[in-house]
Image (tube, rainbow, N blue to C red; front, side, top):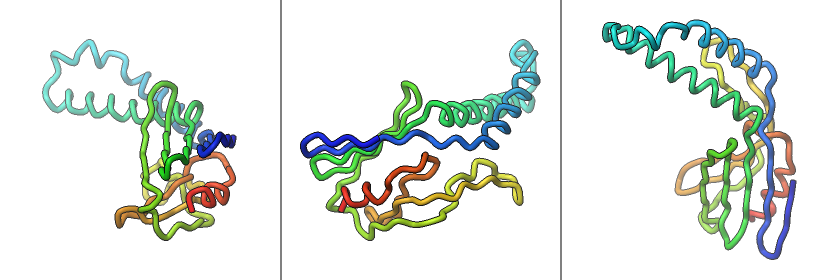
Length: 162
């Protein structure tokens, strides 16, 4: 969705729903919920090794919950105003904002068929989503925008930044 008001341009893009990743995430969360039965009752009585694995188990379940929430409720908003590019990614009430000064953006280009999704870290077993992204150099770092998002007019975003 594109909005133009005065000198402010806004592009809102929803997260891409990778259904294979969603199914695997739901299955893993169901396994974690099943295995979590009884962990909290015995946590205080457990030895340090068991507590470590219980905490690790909890953190992994938070990560997969985040991935599931991003798939269904995530969106990214690109705002170009006052010679700044503001990228706001949010899930429900949780938002992360990055601000780039357009005058410091260099080597802006559209890259085609880039692997944008690698949720799964098992060697030889990864689900990739090939998409177009906008990349540029900012403070000597390569920045990539547009991965894990629904298709949108990335060329229009590039033209607004230039």
